[in-house]
Length: 458
Ligand code: FAD
Image 1: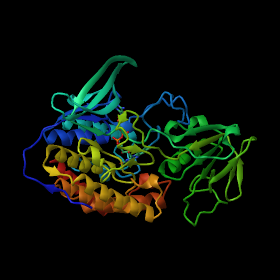
Image 2: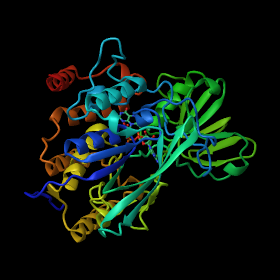
Image 3: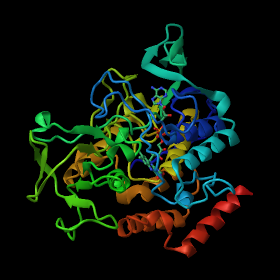
Image 4: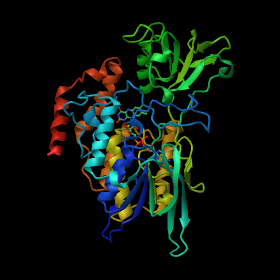
């Protein structure tokens, strides 16, 4: 890891365009403004909150593969509650605590998260810098004739009630991409699927269980969405069959799972047949009405034109510390790429780093050094056998990474209760999949978190 240093030099104020007003865009706008930059946030929706804003609408193609489909951004389903305790989700300096009359549960619903993000935006005066109903259509590096300086041309479309009201072009010194990565579905490749007569969809387009009443549903994917949706659907469906690669070795494919007597675990789907059968690797099969792909999402930035300097495949690359593409740094950055993390604190640490690099208070290493660091990281991922689509998954190194980011901006490290709480939360989810959201197992740790967060409220 190459080190950055805090330097004593003239403070620079940049004109920065931020794409998206979800949690990442809000954290970024706050930190950029705090650092003295001039900020405009472009948000295609009419409110802040990003994917937490429940939308009853779905993509026009439920599988989410048709490139010209009508798209929706949010992947929230009506019953969704957070899969982490609210305290640990909190931004570094803005606690996510209960408020009387709201959803006071430790694992609240999506609506409560939107309220929290709205409060964050109001508290830090962010609403004035957000252009709502405004989609970023194109972002491109240009050289201005007068100064020969490189700037980013950003083309946006503002819509009112779905009708184009204004198309605008504006130049920015820097662009921070905070557009999220949970809306462009990835699907499983299943032999025979083209002749299978049932209905297919992606979890991105799941909203309510009721349409699955008395149906037989195959869910592909055992990550949190797959497990959570399978329980929701099992309340009304005849049978739910969850298919996955990564079951614990103690799994018994001959027994129903958990509290529901109609959820059956299976290995991977090996093929589907014209008569409606779905066959699993362990030898069993079922007739199914629906296959739901809970198989995750791909990174997708249709507006971004970097002339090939940044490629978007299974990951965004090359990228230094998951934030800066070296050849375009620091004027282009991404906040929010990593997976399997505490998203809100991570966004804020990344945003602080971006803000201070842009102002010149913190220096990035030379491009060649950043490229060397990236190569070493990719070599390490390859040597460990990690598939590329997991290279932004931080897993065990998350807290080391957060400490490193905090050091870049001279911030304090996250308190130790956060890592303890995250680890216990995952163990708790794994051990009690049906009930984990209704009982927190470690009251002492909860009290420690509350004590720490309440101090921030004063
Ligand atoms: P988003 O919330 O997706 O925001 C991106 C914003 O950019 C959106 O408002 C979008 O409209 C806007 N945008 C996109 N493209 C454009 C464009 N071209 N022009 C203008 N605007 C644009 N995290 C937790 O901490 N706890 C949880 O319990 C949890 N549960 C989750 C459950 C699900 C089903 C999913 C998918 C994720 C969950 N997460 C959870 C992780 C989640 O990623 C983060 O909490 C976080 O909210 C993501 O924020 P974001 O700002 O990166 O992206």
